Length: 97
Image: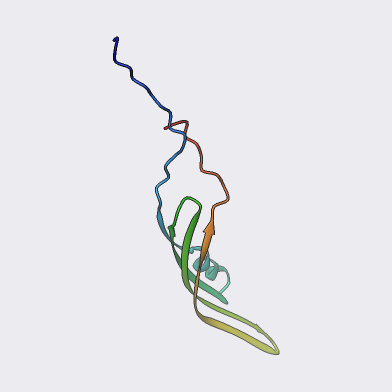
């Protein structure tokens, strides 16, 4: 086909869609079956700001008991954590795809 020049260019970056994530801690309730003195429940929410940074919010409940013959320690309450996650790894290249 003379006259029809088709140029193919390779893509040198990979577009990674920004994501929202949510989750729960399954270790805390499972640990309660092994040790009735510790109960914790936690959930989190995270959203990507860009390819390198995301912000997260975590909330939960903790109930901890420890006793000895001469004293007893009890701690329980709700907690809230917030912060940033930084991705230190480079995005993978997908060979132009």
